[in-house]
Image 1 (tube, rainbow, N blue to C red):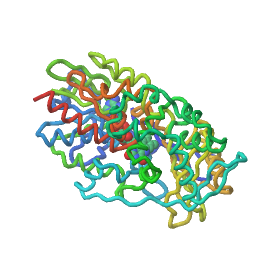
Image 2: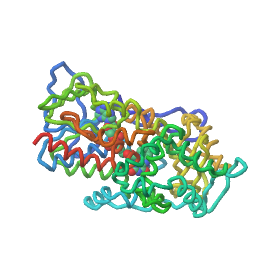
Image 3: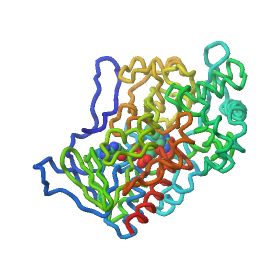
Image 4: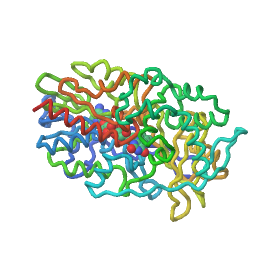
Length: 480
Ligand SMILES: Cc1cc2nc3c(=O)[nH]c(=O)nc-3n(C[C@H](O)[C@H](O)[C@H](O)COP(=O)(O)OP(=O)(O)OC[C@H]3O[C@@H](n4cnc5c(N)ncnc54)[C@H](O)[C@@H]3O)c2cc1C
């Protein structure tokens, strides 16, 4: 099974159906030198069964980092990936003649592990497009046009209130449990709970609800405000640090670094189109089943798939209680649909923030196109059907009246079978219940993934790299 195809529309909107842009399974391997395509299914004992020192499950940044580290230790690594590409929730592709990112797209100068990897492989970043106008909810139920610096300054004031106290309760932002003595009640608060504590004006409350809705997938009641308070702390407890989260875009695209890491790992071999269905662990090793009967056998494994997907894999013995609870509750947000929208004409660089029930709670300007028009990134609310081009155009016109959508591309991460959600955003109570237990190995299985990072948790490649490094160390200790 391939991942759910992205939704693509070109104008005229009416009459055009959805087009699958992914290749069929079993196609040529996409990644560099050490990549193999899955072979067709055969008899029960298969000639293409694989024996390696370590089996890494998932070729996203967490798995790729672990594989690179283990390969550098002289271990033979089999990286088993369900999709027909590497990258996972990072997905560099093209649309309207431009390179686009259907998953994560931005990096911060505060992402120190990623910055070190960039310099190691000679990669560079470029600044993102600067908005010229901010469209924000107004007092009359409509939208106001503001100078971006004025909108940011006011957002900063609201965030100061919302995250007040985080200098203390997240005194060490990379070690979020350092002051766990202060967190018992705070970690139970949802975004809505915290907004309700502040006694804000209606407009200010609408701003915060609208802003956070883009991150919570429209459900501000089910995610923990401490998850974002930690990001606020990691950025230095101010709006300038917060803004840095989206400061950079990699010049060669988000997937390039991962490709470089794997290319630099001669002992790591990537097997695409290889969905893992079962993991059996004994005191001396692991057996990983792909599909119905292909076996990968190793001395240890790294499980580097999104937490939300663990429940789809059969583990023997079963996962520990903390891991089982995390995958059953979910960490990746259920609604995480990112759109790339091509607007016609001379469109200014509008940044727009909606209300919590907007069809597009967030729209971010991207580059103007040389042939006319501009690209925009949007994040969909639950009321937007991204297969309906007319609805997408209507949603954009909330912010830019008269705008014409030439075409768009969308990916629904919540429906993607190998993500089952978007970026991670902890639920109330998960910080104290899950960390650090979820980072501990289970027999010969180590765990990795941005969803379980200590530092830049959930929505950052930085967190995935952090956990890949940790998992490689744990595996080395397990098998030596
Ligand atoms: C829309 C969106 C926007 C984001 N924006 C940003 C951003 O701007 N900046 C940023 O730094 N981060 C961003 N993120 C978060 C970032 O993409 C993730 O934190 C990071 O990519 C997670 O890496 P990972 O390796 O932990 O997981 P993944 O990238 O999800 O990798 C896991 C891999 O496991 C594979 N897999 C799943 N199930 C199986 C199975 N059964 N068998 C084999 N393989 C399997 C998957 O196919 C995938 O390749 C965003 C995420 C999304 C979805």
